[in-house]
Image (cartoon, rainbow, N blue to C red; front, side):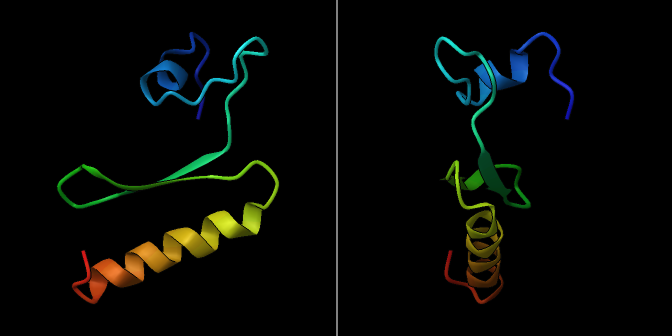
Length: 64
């Protein structure tokens, strides 16, 4: 997603201090548009997918 003015990075608090680039964060957003989960991991991209899938499975099974 483009964020040329940095407003999205600021809104979601994902800006690296000093460097100014975005941190790697995966959000799972519910049907009510609320954030159900935020997962941060700079090194393991596969973990983002696994975490998001776990949250979605839990929601679909009524655990949230």
